[in-house]
Length: 110
Image (cartoon, rainbow, N blue to C red; front, side):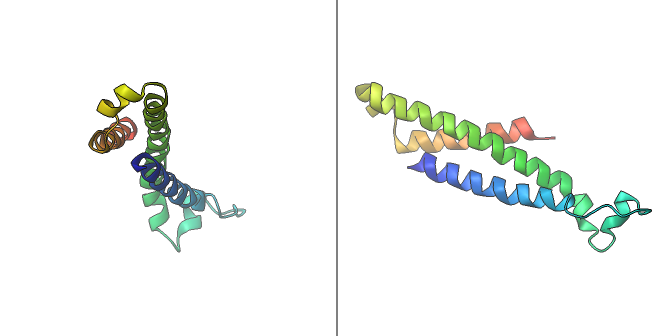
């Protein structure tokens, strides 16, 4: 259950940041206007774009590894139920989720 909640939150955040990343490319180019001048009315967009892009990648990597962790948990519960009683606990799943988020942050840090 915790894996699915974390996965849903990670996917939702990835979609939010992906939309913010897409905003940068939403304006049509204008003849005779430089690309950096298109954002004179919203000057924060070029500065926040690297942060938005890094967060989108962070949550994308996090979603992939949470899916893998959830798959291993389900494999143990189905194929090895007696071993799973020892290994598949709520505290361990919280620890795995925290480790996945930390590893994803380290992996995608600029």
